[in-house]
Length: 375
Ligand SMILES: *Cc1c(COP(=O)(O)O)cnc(C)c1O
Image 1 (tube, protein in one colour):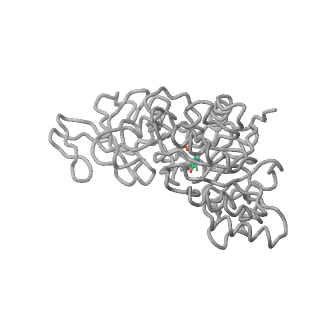
Image 2 (cartoon, protein in one colour):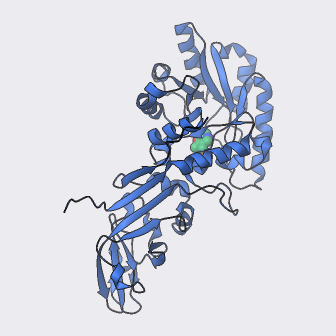
Image 3 (cartoon, protein in one colour):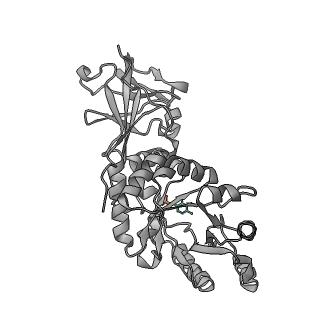
């Protein structure tokens, strides 16, 4: 035995990510389309994803943390195009400014304090430094408040030494197309833009791209939709699935009517049943909230999850499955094109972002595609 059969496999389709990026680019055109690759590209591997997107022509990348930007830069600096940029959404914490500069990172400045620290670094180096500036238009998370904008306007020299790449803001409810916050935030953003007449503007996340051209401005910055997350609540998903997960059958057993299965016996067999134990669990991001709700699939047939999801295993009712298929090592589809991350998120009462970013480190990861170079 070579021991090469993995317990669970995670397949990541880089061509689907590129197809999704191109689709978003077309919708947003003439705005340019960037890519948010924070949290290791939503758990899918930032180096692989960014390399594929660079080949497709993407030039604006966004991470959350300085450390994420440093890692990405170190991994790709030998092949980094001169016209590509990594923005750091959180901006630098005190003391991290020089690290940003030495790793070619462009901070998003979210407060007067961050602006002051970045201008101080510019003065020290006696050169202009690039940065985006974020304004808060109603998310109440990151960005300059209206009072901060007044203080900036009262003393414009606060921005001396900064070349503003974009003026930014972030929508709180973009996936709800009819939510009045979207238009309100758009109006507030347009008002803030009047104070920065020179700067390009960048507002839309994935869902924002689907709110219409008024939301596109100069650059859009999708994350989730690139990775197959449905952008708009209640509407068909236009994105291609990116992630597939298969997990191996470990063993099967027959249980009698009334016998309990798994921790705390949250499921008992209503009739004599056959139970398969499959090698994926909540440590792999198969969330506990999927217990007794989600399904796996074997050869195209649904098998319901019964009992609690454990750390390393999930139990499914395979009573209806031809026993010939129930051999150790048989591969169950955990996430496939029929039951994708969006469907699993509904069953597990979370969103598809959390499904993606919870995928653990135990999978054998296999990347397909991403090789083609686009003109
Ligand atoms: C995460 C994030 C995005 C990307 O949002 P998606 O919904 O994943 O497209 C864009 N902008 C900011 C500021 C973010 O934090």
